[in-house]
Image (tube, rainbow, N blue to C red; front, side):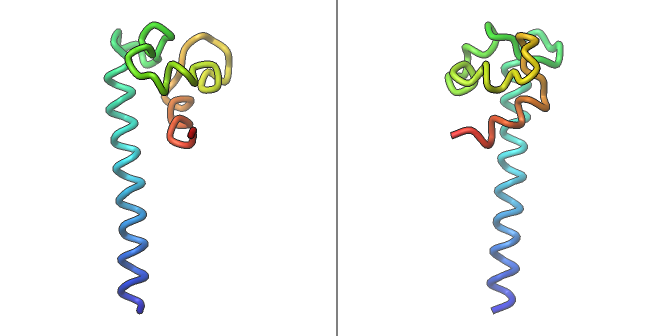
Length: 76
């Protein structure tokens, strides 16, 4: 019983790491000019980001920071 529980926890932790790595890779891909932000023009490469641009841009500076982008994981 304990082994099954530990394996479940390990699987959850691993999937969270994979999502984090995927979101980091996607951020780097979309940040075409390498300035550390995703502009609206850059976001057009990924429809989910483009559709949610205003939600992600919490400080309304017309660009998405890495911190703001991390919220994408939680959007449906």
